[in-house]
Structure formats: structure tokens, C-alpha cells
Length: 113
Image (cartoon, rainbow, N blue to C red; front, top):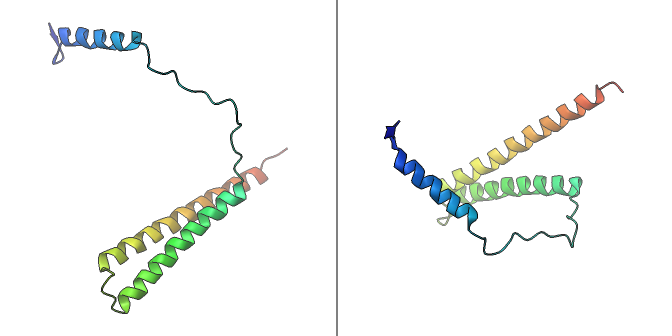
């Protein structure tokens, strides 16, 4: 019997395969780490690292652009444009994150206690 383009025998076959896979014992049970607590992430360090990577990306784009303008044959125009777009996207994402943080701060400050 065919229902909606799929043969019912194929459905039964798939169900049998799923049941067989479910009853098959796993080779190793998943490991649960209980020995060490999760490392704490310092927000200021994470933010500084993100801003440093954006600045590094912009500096790299500027350096590649300068090399291309000076006539360095090892730098292609396409590589310069790609690096500049990466730097632009990184900066735009950073601005959006900043805007969200400012909005969250404003919302929290406007809450009545």
C-alpha cells in the first residue's frame, strides 16, 4: 500500500531499523565529568578579548591595504577586499552587541523595584 508516495513496507523497514538501533548497546557510555567545576568566565576579559580581535582584524586590513597601495606583489586586491569586509563585519557585529548591552542596561535601569 502506498501512502503519499512512500510505500508502507519502507516505513515498516525504517521503524524496524530504528528499534534495532535503540536496543543495540552503546560501545561506551557518555562520560560525565564531576571532578572539576566549570571554569568561570570573566565578562570583562571576554569583552576585552573580543574588542582586541576586532581591532586586530581592522589593523590587518589596514596593513594589507597599505601594502597593496605601495605596490607589493604578494598582496592581491581580492585578499585586501576580503580582509576589509571581514573587519567591517566584525566592527558592525561589535556595534550591534554594544547597542544590545546599552538597551539592556537602559531596560534594567527603568525597572521599578
